[in-house]
Length: 554
Image 1: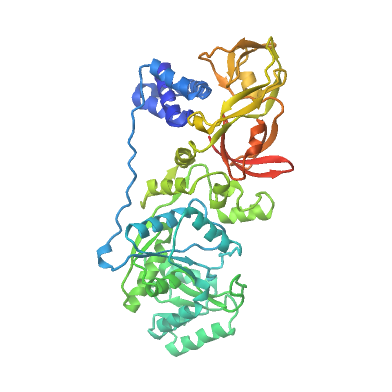
Image 2: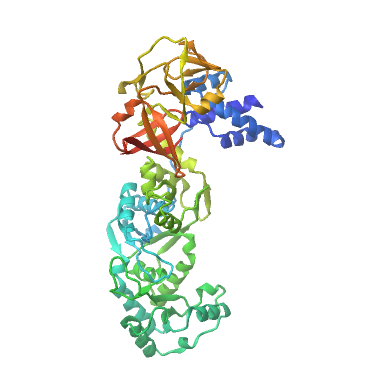
């Protein structure tokens, strides 16, 4: 059993930059030997220990160990996942798409899906893409965050999304008023004065209210009163006449426009009657000549209402393509929760790593191309998808691994003094082991003041280990010098004095303080590094003379 686990741990480590993950190793082991499922607890225990040991080896050592087992990694030719063709493209002279973010906060990793898919289809069909800021306030629960206008555009530009036209829905209210009047004149909409509770009960029971039978003239007069301030917020709405016996109560006589007395961040109190999403889009998808709508399946009801309105006007229907929810395991993406946490001072801002906003991912050194590949590999499917964050990290690792220079950093350090060791003033180490032309950096050494991680000090007690690029030691009652010979033993990072105290902000918002080699003082803001045996991090700023990094991933 141990040999099989060791094999898959080594393969997994070599496929992921020397860092194996327990879960996929266990999955491979049980796939090869299903009979081990009855001893799964033991498999997990052994795999966890083997993975820990493997991750302490260098890549070269891992390759050697795999060769000793007579195994090898099969070279996988990764084929880029192709976009599924959009339906009925041949019916249109030009494909016209739109993305419609609501400005309640910056875009997060989930919102990036719609933006990237639409952008890719724009390129695929040499079409047009409109960026429509969907900033209507017809829904009571909708909250507009003023700074999100800039944050959304900033995030999309960073992703590399290109649009042909920028449109603000809040500039188009008069257009929606005209089409509301047209629906009223067709006898397809009416002004309802029922309060929200009566409206809800009537819907559930399938009962038509008294206002449904009002004349066209009466409805037009009442609509003008809505616009002119006669009605207060909540006293009147415009409703669409659907079917009060429809099997889904939510579809019965939907509200199309509602009064909102709130001040709007862009247009102030210029308008007091606002459309709901499905009405504004039923009109704009027609007027903007949108051919294909790519949206989340949570908007299926809105899609039904739009189609109903298109049928009333006799308009050609765009193609609607729905996709399922994207859930990243262990994350709950909520702009409302993030906003509240920011207001309470729990989060530092919209670029706090816990928000998973595009700004926060950029701060961590996640590359826009990694996000794009991550989204494209998920594709366009109506099924809900659960994926581990490691899938995104693997894409990012492929991009940054060759660019990120290597540095020593020790978290939770413990100071050791090496006995029986001759004095060494410094040692030279390469910036990147795979790119010798980048040169080497000099790390100062004081054998009486070496810092290693406390965890390594405990785990390697009474064992011989190597301080990377320095020499071998044995940790016992004292720490003894054991020579310079390169051996098949664990290798750990270290720093000496002088060193640099640094702060690393983790994805969960926690902070780690560590010591790093002094050459990090040469880094520029925005540089991405790999702290050996710690992970990739992006240099963000200097805070009280202390370099601050944001952790990306292992």
